[in-house]
Image 1: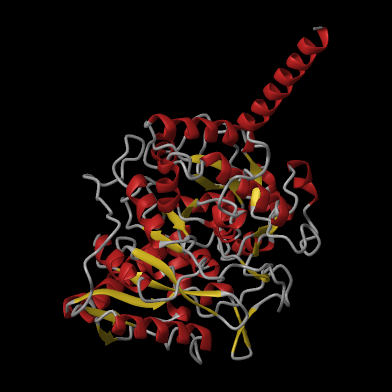
Image 2 (image 1 turned 180 degrees about the vertical axis):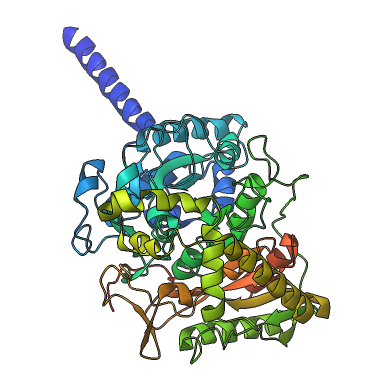
Length: 532
């Protein structure tokens, strides 16, 4: 009799242990899941939401799949290493290095709550969807340090920023903070604080900047959506280089700041996910004066572009000798896709080049509140990354005329775009994002780390075609992938809508997404190679 009760008690104990382990969601995808780790990690948000509703997978399963990939591919991100990341070539060598710190404990708790919400029918629009948060967006309790040694001990944020509030309200799970270039001032993401972030498609090359950690995290399957900001191309550059969809909204569409050059926006692996995230973060906010009302709605589907005029510019005169073969070919691919979608392609060229544009743009930007960076240059010169120290050439030399020159250049640019594109009946302009996709991950960390086109090395600032639409900040721009280069680095293009005409830019991007072979499908995934 005693043996009977002993066995009964033992079985009850073992059952309780098994139930507890199952309920706690051990740190791996359930053995019963019909999806692989890779499938769950890369699955689009819109698809996951439908599967969550059907009970075919759970937010907890997806989270664990993505955490597993972080453990495999990201490398170390322990904050105790912050003061030691001075050897850029050796820290996290061969790893993606896209994360500053993780929020996994809270994320697991929130994922379980999301699991239950799907079971009881109270799920919100982004319930259980993981989001990587750029080291600029304020999350309550998180530290924002702009990848700068002088800010590494900043106090944690006391409240969520406006965009974060909107995402949290709809059930998004913030899983980690993503790396940035220091003070958001380089088109590649590396700093003395966090080291070099690398492109999962090919680790030798950069992941873009300044939202480079967000771009790399999405490409590596670490999260489902990510936040970005764009003051000179910081959403579009990493989107292009990582094979993503990114949107630079027109100034005021998303609550950002009062600097007209800057905006916040979504980054995602698919058009539908980008549109979903943008629809959630857009709209007025009691926090930010400059946001536009009423809110603009972004649907998932758009009217065909058959019969519509779409302008295309190769920007052959942007730099002497023309852009790289890869950038030209990406525009060729976009043209073929536009024609396949039935659009009338109108070829145009704008009278603008890097040599004339970039110095004026940069001086104009630096006459905004960005000038505050100069305050620390003398005292903290030895603590800054090299590209921040290079700004010293502007310190004390900016004048009111520099801002006037930027405004004059903006007026000229706006008039030319209107006359050559939109007054001709075109609904959008398609153009290159970058002059080349090949930027070393540690670009300009040493004199030999430079980007080259046709055998000639260029300053990185002259190879970005993105700042055009930061000075002309009322134009919406979608960046989308069109192909992989021979070195397995994605190449994207910009789709520019007329001022505040976001939906026509989305319309063209949607049409192209239906005819261009998508990445993150059919075996077209990053393979973490490391080849020059």
